[in-house]
Image (cartoon, rainbow, N blue to C red):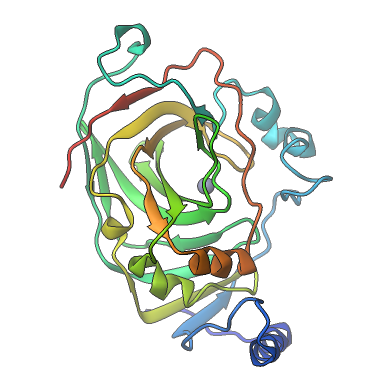
Amino acid sequence: MSHSIQTSPSLALGASVLALLASCGTSGPKAPKSTPTSQVRLPQPQTPHWDYGAEHGPASWGELCPEFAACKSGHEQSPIDLTGVPELGAPALITNYVPAALQIVHHEHVADIVNNGHSVQVDYPESAELAVGDRRYKLLQFHFHSPSEHSVNGRSFPLEMHFVHKADDGQLAVIGVLFEEGPENEILVPLFDHLPTARGVRYHYDHVKVDVDALLPPNRIAYRYDGSLTTPPCSEGVAWFVLANTMSLSSRQIAEFRAVMFGNNRPTQPRHERSVVRDGVRER
Ligand SMILES: [Zn+2]
Protein backbone atom coordinates (compact mmCIF):
# COMPACT_ATOMS: atom_id res chain seq x y z
CA MET A 1 0.00 0.00 0.00
CA SER A 2 1.67 3.21 -1.10
CA HIS A 3 -0.76 6.00 -0.41
CA SER A 4 0.89 9.34 0.16
CA ILE A 5 -0.26 11.22 3.21
CA GLN A 6 -1.08 14.90 3.14
CA THR A 7 -2.81 17.13 5.56
CA SER A 8 -3.95 20.65 4.90
CA PRO A 9 -5.00 23.54 7.14
CA SER A 10 -8.53 23.44 5.69
CA LEU A 11 -8.85 19.81 6.73
CA ALA A 12 -7.70 20.57 10.23
CA LEU A 13 -10.17 23.46 10.36
CA GLY A 14 -12.91 21.18 9.05
CA ALA A 15 -12.21 18.70 11.83
CA SER A 16 -12.37 21.35 14.54
CA VAL A 17 -15.62 22.75 13.16
CA LEU A 18 -17.03 19.24 13.20
CA ALA A 19 -15.92 18.74 16.78
CA LEU A 20 -17.63 22.01 17.70
CA LEU A 21 -20.84 20.96 15.98
CA ALA A 22 -20.79 17.62 17.73
CA SER A 23 -20.26 19.19 21.14
CA CYS A 24 -23.18 21.57 20.54
CA GLY A 25 -25.45 18.63 19.85
CA THR A 26 -26.54 19.93 16.47
CA SER A 27 -27.52 17.65 13.65
CA GLY A 28 -24.54 18.56 11.45
CA PRO A 29 -22.31 15.90 9.93
CA LYS A 30 -20.61 13.77 12.53
CA ALA A 31 -16.85 13.38 12.76
CA PRO A 32 -15.48 10.10 11.37
CA LYS A 33 -15.44 7.40 14.03
CA SER A 34 -11.82 6.47 13.46
CA THR A 35 -8.64 7.87 11.97
CA PRO A 36 -7.87 7.10 8.33
CA THR A 37 -4.92 4.84 7.59
CA SER A 38 -4.04 7.34 4.85
CA GLN A 39 -5.54 10.24 2.97
CA VAL A 40 -4.71 11.77 -0.40
CA ARG A 41 -5.88 15.08 -1.81
CA LEU A 42 -7.04 14.37 -5.37
CA PRO A 43 -6.19 16.65 -8.32
CA GLN A 44 -8.89 19.10 -9.41
CA PRO A 45 -11.02 17.65 -12.22
CA GLN A 46 -10.29 19.12 -15.69
CA THR A 47 -13.97 19.45 -16.64
CA PRO A 48 -16.04 22.61 -16.11
CA HIS A 49 -17.77 23.02 -12.78
CA TRP A 50 -21.19 21.37 -12.61
CA ASP A 51 -23.53 20.71 -9.74
CA TYR A 52 -27.20 20.23 -8.88
CA GLY A 53 -28.02 23.90 -8.35
CA ALA A 54 -29.90 26.39 -10.51
CA GLU A 55 -26.99 27.81 -12.50
CA HIS A 56 -24.79 24.77 -13.22
CA GLY A 57 -27.43 22.12 -12.58
CA PRO A 58 -28.94 19.31 -14.66
CA ALA A 59 -30.89 21.63 -16.99
CA SER A 60 -27.65 23.36 -18.09
CA TRP A 61 -25.18 20.45 -18.10
CA GLY A 62 -25.50 19.95 -21.87
CA GLU A 63 -24.41 23.55 -22.50
CA LEU A 64 -21.45 23.74 -20.13
CA CYS A 65 -18.99 22.30 -22.67
CA PRO A 66 -19.06 20.27 -25.93
CA GLU A 67 -18.06 17.10 -24.06
CA PHE A 68 -21.30 17.30 -22.03
CA ALA A 69 -23.55 17.62 -25.14
CA ALA A 70 -25.16 14.20 -24.62
CA CYS A 71 -26.75 15.53 -21.40
CA LYS A 72 -28.97 17.66 -23.66
CA SER A 73 -29.10 15.90 -27.03
CA GLY A 74 -28.98 12.24 -25.95
CA HIS A 75 -32.01 10.04 -26.49
CA GLU A 76 -31.03 7.23 -24.13
CA GLN A 77 -30.46 9.15 -20.94
CA SER A 78 -30.70 8.07 -17.30
CA PRO A 79 -32.32 8.00 -14.84
CA ILE A 80 -35.89 7.19 -15.91
CA ASP A 81 -39.17 6.53 -14.20
CA LEU A 82 -39.85 2.79 -14.20
CA THR A 83 -43.55 2.78 -14.90
CA GLY A 84 -45.74 0.11 -16.37
CA VAL A 85 -42.85 -2.28 -16.87
CA PRO A 86 -44.13 -5.74 -17.69
CA GLU A 87 -42.76 -8.97 -16.33
CA LEU A 88 -40.52 -10.81 -18.70
CA GLY A 89 -42.80 -12.68 -21.06
CA ALA A 90 -44.86 -9.75 -22.30
CA PRO A 91 -43.77 -10.02 -25.93
CA ALA A 92 -44.44 -6.42 -27.00
CA LEU A 93 -41.47 -4.98 -25.14
CA ILE A 94 -38.98 -7.77 -25.63
CA THR A 95 -37.07 -6.36 -28.51
CA ASN A 96 -33.26 -6.33 -28.50
CA TYR A 97 -33.27 -8.36 -25.32
CA VAL A 98 -31.15 -11.44 -24.87
CA PRO A 99 -32.26 -13.60 -21.95
CA ALA A 100 -29.32 -14.04 -19.64
CA ALA A 101 -28.67 -14.76 -16.02
CA LEU A 102 -27.12 -11.98 -14.01
CA GLN A 103 -24.59 -13.25 -11.56
CA ILE A 104 -22.90 -11.05 -9.05
CA VAL A 105 -19.74 -12.06 -7.23
CA HIS A 106 -18.68 -9.35 -4.82
CA HIS A 107 -16.19 -9.62 -2.02
CA GLU A 108 -15.73 -7.88 1.27
CA HIS A 109 -13.11 -5.22 0.80
CA VAL A 110 -11.41 -2.32 2.47
CA ALA A 111 -13.12 0.98 1.80
CA ASP A 112 -11.40 3.73 -0.15
CA ILE A 113 -13.86 6.54 0.27
CA VAL A 114 -14.06 10.00 -1.31
CA ASN A 115 -16.52 12.89 -1.28
CA ASN A 116 -16.07 14.24 -4.82
CA GLY A 117 -18.62 17.01 -4.33
CA HIS A 118 -21.17 15.17 -6.48
CA SER A 119 -21.46 12.01 -4.46
CA VAL A 120 -19.77 9.94 -1.80
CA GLN A 121 -17.92 7.23 -3.67
CA VAL A 122 -16.16 4.06 -2.57
CA ASP A 123 -13.51 2.84 -5.02
CA TYR A 124 -12.69 -0.80 -5.56
CA PRO A 125 -9.12 -1.45 -6.65
CA GLU A 126 -9.70 -5.17 -6.48
CA SER A 127 -12.03 -7.20 -8.57
CA ALA A 128 -15.59 -8.02 -7.86
CA GLU A 129 -17.36 -9.45 -10.81
CA LEU A 130 -20.70 -9.08 -12.50
CA ALA A 131 -21.59 -11.63 -15.17
CA VAL A 132 -24.47 -11.02 -17.54
CA GLY A 133 -24.66 -14.06 -19.76
CA ASP A 134 -21.22 -14.35 -21.33
CA ARG A 135 -20.21 -10.80 -20.51
CA ARG A 136 -17.99 -10.10 -17.53
CA TYR A 137 -17.73 -6.75 -15.80
CA LYS A 138 -15.44 -5.67 -12.96
CA LEU A 139 -16.73 -3.47 -10.16
CA LEU A 140 -14.96 -0.09 -10.23
CA GLN A 141 -16.80 1.84 -7.54
CA PHE A 142 -20.12 2.42 -5.85
CA HIS A 143 -21.69 5.70 -4.80
CA PHE A 144 -24.86 7.23 -3.42
CA HIS A 145 -27.61 9.57 -4.58
CA SER A 146 -30.15 11.11 -2.21
CA PRO A 147 -33.00 11.20 -2.95
CA SER A 148 -33.06 8.41 -5.54
CA GLU A 149 -32.56 9.09 -9.25
CA HIS A 150 -34.77 6.32 -10.61
CA SER A 151 -38.38 6.25 -9.56
CA VAL A 152 -40.91 3.44 -9.72
CA ASN A 153 -44.40 4.39 -10.90
CA GLY A 154 -43.51 7.99 -10.12
CA ARG A 155 -42.39 7.22 -6.59
CA SER A 156 -38.99 8.41 -5.40
CA PHE A 157 -36.89 6.79 -2.64
CA PRO A 158 -34.71 8.39 0.05
CA LEU A 159 -31.46 6.83 -1.23
CA GLU A 160 -30.12 5.03 -4.30
CA MET A 161 -26.80 3.25 -4.64
CA HIS A 162 -25.04 2.77 -7.96
CA PHE A 163 -22.53 -0.05 -8.42
CA VAL A 164 -20.50 0.86 -11.50
CA HIS A 165 -18.94 -2.02 -13.45
CA LYS A 166 -16.77 -2.03 -16.55
CA ALA A 167 -16.11 -4.75 -19.13
CA ASP A 168 -12.71 -5.26 -20.77
CA ASP A 169 -14.00 -3.53 -23.91
CA GLY A 170 -14.96 -0.46 -21.86
CA GLN A 171 -18.71 -0.97 -21.70
CA LEU A 172 -20.28 0.09 -18.42
CA ALA A 173 -22.96 -1.76 -16.49
CA VAL A 174 -24.55 -0.14 -13.44
CA ILE A 175 -26.60 -1.90 -10.78
CA GLY A 176 -28.98 0.49 -9.03
CA VAL A 177 -30.32 -0.35 -5.58
CA LEU A 178 -33.22 1.66 -4.12
CA PHE A 179 -33.46 2.15 -0.35
CA GLU A 180 -36.62 2.71 1.67
CA GLU A 181 -36.88 4.04 5.22
CA GLY A 182 -37.22 1.17 7.67
CA PRO A 183 -34.97 -0.87 9.96
CA GLU A 184 -31.32 0.14 10.28
CA ASN A 185 -29.01 -1.23 7.59
CA GLU A 186 -26.09 -2.78 9.48
CA ILE A 187 -23.92 -3.08 6.39
CA LEU A 188 -24.02 0.69 5.89
CA VAL A 189 -22.97 1.45 9.49
CA PRO A 190 -19.17 1.23 9.01
CA LEU A 191 -19.44 3.32 5.83
CA PHE A 192 -21.72 5.97 7.32
CA ASP A 193 -19.40 6.16 10.34
CA HIS A 194 -16.74 7.42 7.93
CA LEU A 195 -18.60 9.64 5.47
CA PRO A 196 -16.08 12.29 4.35
CA THR A 197 -17.16 15.91 4.65
CA ALA A 198 -13.97 17.32 3.10
CA ARG A 199 -14.27 17.25 -0.68
CA GLY A 200 -11.65 15.88 -3.05
CA VAL A 201 -9.78 13.83 -0.45
CA ARG A 202 -9.52 10.07 -0.71
CA TYR A 203 -9.55 8.38 2.69
CA HIS A 204 -8.37 4.86 3.19
CA TYR A 205 -9.31 2.85 6.27
CA ASP A 206 -7.59 -0.51 6.62
CA HIS A 207 -10.06 -1.64 9.26
CA VAL A 208 -13.29 -0.59 7.50
CA LYS A 209 -14.73 -3.45 5.49
CA VAL A 210 -17.84 -3.51 3.38
CA ASP A 211 -19.62 -6.63 2.29
CA VAL A 212 -20.82 -5.32 -1.06
CA ASP A 213 -22.86 -8.41 -1.69
CA ALA A 214 -24.91 -7.75 1.44
CA LEU A 215 -25.79 -4.26 0.20
CA LEU A 216 -27.84 -5.86 -2.56
CA PRO A 217 -31.19 -7.53 -1.92
CA PRO A 218 -31.02 -11.34 -2.10
CA ASN A 219 -33.69 -11.47 -4.80
CA ARG A 220 -32.17 -9.81 -7.85
CA ILE A 221 -35.05 -9.29 -10.20
CA ALA A 222 -33.97 -6.24 -12.19
CA TYR A 223 -35.40 -3.57 -14.44
CA ARG A 224 -33.07 -3.62 -17.42
CA TYR A 225 -32.67 -0.88 -19.97
CA ASP A 226 -30.04 0.93 -22.05
CA GLY A 227 -29.17 4.30 -20.56
CA SER A 228 -26.39 6.69 -19.68
CA LEU A 229 -24.25 8.03 -16.90
CA THR A 230 -26.51 10.21 -14.74
CA THR A 231 -23.73 12.78 -14.33
CA PRO A 232 -21.77 14.74 -16.97
CA PRO A 233 -20.67 13.78 -19.58
CA CYS A 234 -23.93 11.70 -19.57
CA SER A 235 -22.29 9.14 -21.90
CA GLU A 236 -24.71 6.59 -23.35
CA GLY A 237 -24.23 2.87 -23.88
CA VAL A 238 -24.58 2.03 -20.19
CA ALA A 239 -26.38 -1.22 -19.37
CA TRP A 240 -28.69 -0.50 -16.43
CA PHE A 241 -29.96 -3.03 -13.90
CA VAL A 242 -32.19 -1.35 -11.32
CA LEU A 243 -33.13 -3.99 -8.78
CA ALA A 244 -36.87 -4.32 -8.26
CA ASN A 245 -36.46 -5.25 -4.59
CA THR A 246 -35.48 -2.47 -2.24
CA MET A 247 -33.18 -2.40 0.78
CA SER A 248 -33.88 -0.50 3.97
CA LEU A 249 -32.07 2.06 6.07
CA SER A 250 -33.22 3.92 9.18
CA SER A 251 -34.39 7.54 9.37
CA ARG A 252 -31.25 8.23 11.42
CA GLN A 253 -29.07 6.81 8.65
CA ILE A 254 -30.90 8.90 6.05
CA ALA A 255 -30.22 11.98 8.20
CA GLU A 256 -26.55 10.97 8.58
CA PHE A 257 -26.10 10.79 4.84
CA ARG A 258 -28.05 13.97 4.16
CA ALA A 259 -25.93 15.89 6.67
CA VAL A 260 -23.04 15.27 4.25
CA MET A 261 -24.87 15.33 0.91
CA PHE A 262 -28.40 15.90 -0.29
CA GLY A 263 -30.04 16.69 -3.62
CA ASN A 264 -27.45 14.98 -5.85
CA ASN A 265 -30.11 13.42 -8.05
CA ARG A 266 -30.62 14.14 -11.74
CA PRO A 267 -34.32 14.38 -12.65
CA THR A 268 -35.80 11.48 -14.62
CA GLN A 269 -35.29 11.68 -18.39
CA PRO A 270 -37.66 10.82 -21.29
CA ARG A 271 -37.73 7.14 -22.10
CA HIS A 272 -38.32 7.71 -25.84
CA GLU A 273 -38.49 4.42 -27.75
CA ARG A 274 -36.49 2.40 -25.28
CA SER A 275 -37.69 -0.92 -23.98
CA VAL A 276 -37.45 -1.69 -20.29
CA VAL A 277 -37.90 -5.23 -19.12
CA ARG A 278 -38.18 -6.72 -15.68
CA ASP A 279 -36.70 -10.15 -15.50
CA GLY A 280 -35.78 -12.75 -12.97
CA VAL A 281 -32.07 -12.93 -12.35
CA ARG A 282 -30.28 -15.65 -10.54
CA GLU A 283 -30.17 -15.57 -6.76
CA ARG A 284 -26.91 -16.49 -5.11
ZN1 LIG B 1 -24.80 7.37 -9.84
